[in-house]
Amino acid sequence: MNRRELEMQLQDLLEGVLDASALDGLQQELRENPEARELYREYVRLQNALQMRSAGVDLVGVVPMDQVVERRQRRMMRNSGFAAAAVLLVGLLVMAFFMVREQPSALAFTTSPGTEFVLSGMGGEDSPQGMVIEEGTRLEIKRGTVELKFASGVRGIIKGPADLTLHRKDLLYLARGTGWFEVPEEAIGFQVSTPDLVLTDLGTEFGILTQPDFLDEVHVFSGKVEVLNRYGLKRQQLAVEDEAWVAGPAGRWKKIPLRPDHFIKKLPKTAPKAGTYVFQDDFETDTSSDYTSIDYARGTAIPGEFSIDSENSNVLEIRASYGAQVVHKEATLEVGQCFKTDWMTQVVAHNSVKPSTSQVLNNDPKGVGYNVRLRVDNGVFEIDFRRGSEGSYKWFNNSPFTAPDTFWVERYSATEFAWFRGASVNERTKIAEITFESDPGKLFVGLQAYKMTSRFDNLAITEQGESSKVGRGDDSAQGERDD
Image (tube, rainbow, N blue to C red; front, top):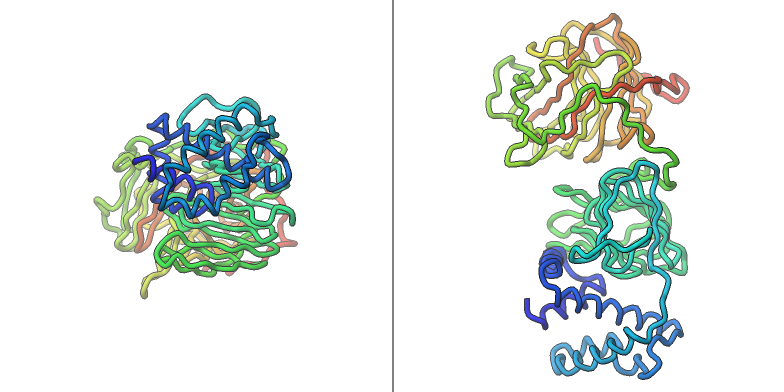
């Protein structure tokens, strides 16, 4: 990348209009080129000086900066005389570097107990000291939750795993993660960009969900925001209170159900309770020989329709041309334990096909079918019994499913179970309680897919200790009995 291209992309970056493909190339250039990193710092300092100057703070006491380096003038000069202007800008920046008064950090952050994170400067330099994020700094949250407090008054809560970079004091790039933001009136214009979209706040409370291989979502809880799709038609959409939208790959926007339960507004006071692991498979190596696989409807083998860690994917993938079931040969769910799995695939109907994905409990890992199935069918939760088992269930919260999410099956007693969703025990929401009419005995844990490719991660059984059995009856809706 030559210097002119680099300068143009840096200006686009600081103005929040750089598209995702160009951003990837720019980040690569900054990682590999020390001169590019230095130019990036110069542009950030200039951006700060211009913003402070507009607020009445003179950071450069020698030359009236607003007469020389107004952004609009620089835009007009890009196509004629850019090199001459760049020489003048560098001179100003050298003076600014030595004469600027120290300013408070644009962003401070605090973490919940048990949070694991990595803080680094753009290009891999040493991490900034203290719990602050300077412009150009990247924060990777491996586990836990972080609260962001911007100097402008904007507040955000980011749930890990997440990856974010502060491009300027009013522009945050969220490459991955689930974020909730509250923007005061004086900070209107605050922006969050993701690989799929650019959001401009118009005075509001909103949430953003962005994960690799999924379409990014915007949820507006009060006020309104303007969102720009980075791809295809690059359409803008005004999103108002109680609306949620997903950024389609063709550049259009699609309305989806509002999901406030995906976001948290306060920093958790305790570390996530993971329980004691009795069994865990994170699919980072091929463990396919530990599982049986079968067409659960037809009773035939399904060779080649599931794989673990294929091409270093670190996931279990079921490619179901019809109905595929995978059950662990040894892992069983006992009383006081939870069967936990990360579901990575959105379940959406296409044409006349209604796909589904499920957690199952089966008293015979080699047997056809299942004793109970906890299923998402085209985004809707369903529960049913088979293999001679009978029972009933109560719904607590069966709002539509949006991937990715973590699902838990907890065994309260020999016959009583509960189904949850949520990132941790602290954050999870009860979907339903299930009761068998008689003890089904030892139950092996498994997964299903029907007419779709389903991806799962982090299958585990944990010992929860004290039961989380609460809220029976009053806030629930009676489920259908499956006969």
